[in-house]
Length: 390
Ligand SMILES: *Cc1c(COP(=O)(O)O)cnc(C)c1O
Image (cartoon, rainbow, N blue to C red; front, top):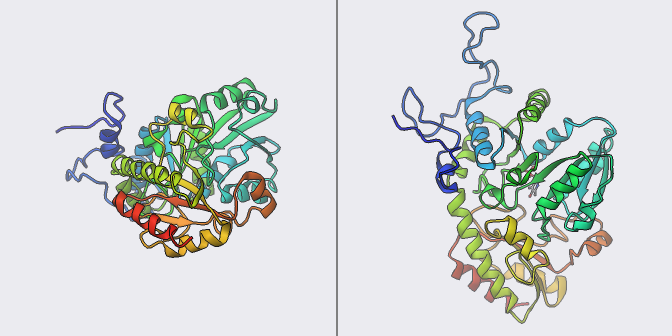
């Protein structure tokens, strides 16, 4: 029987992605894990479970396959799958102590900002927001920082944090580092390889990739932290369901080819939009005009499928463009095979106060694209036609 060692570093990322987390089932040879729809497992004698399986919140073979796959692809000691990205982040913070200081990036996913500010702060954690793209800030973190929490690239402004500098700055004050790797996915960036302690994913996005499941994950670098996360995952209980785990693993198998097409299409559209007279500005880490283009080029294998642009004529013009698009569908979320468009101001980032949005640079005419894997020519033609109405 052949076995594939998906954690074998000599194999390419695409090969490891296809095989990660699962060896063909010894009984049947099944190449994908069965969906173990069971809540409990028969024991041979009291407190003598078979192969350790007692109860599905604690152990489920389908979820374990996904968790192993994510750990292998991010290069961590262990992975954990949750019911959503928010559940993953909440569980990570449960491993901290009351009064611990979390230093977080100032441009975070809106739901993460809400979780920190309205729930975790009430439960006793302290938060301090900084511009993690600034090396001077990273070199001078507060001495009592327990956790540095950041996203790169960020949503929606695609700001890029220099990960090596962030990790070095955190080490200097004895802090741990967690990186939300949702926008890059393990195909483009592996923070643990650069020294991060924890990687966070909303697997809802690129990892699952088909807009058919909500999920989240944590991958931890070392076994000690794995113990703490395992305890809190089981005790708080926001685990990924078996069928959701299956869908996420099924989506993950094609991550590398999807990501190649997402990047190729986004690069094409970024260049097209940058040259368009009705476009004020384009934000894409792959453009030389992006303020952290060099940093992105150094730490990412490609620049991702997300881009933003501002239409000449502000919000009214942006609304006309969005209404005229046909291939791009108006919806929140991202990372699926289909192209989506949204206006962060009135939609995903509506919970950010308007003056704060302006400070951050989220203008009312900002349009965010999640560039899908359709034919690039069709996407470009769709934008060209819609921009004629602006
Ligand atoms: C969507 C998202 C989350 C939240 O994940 P859910 O699966 O929606 O709970 C967290 N971080 C980032 C960067 C996201 O895009």
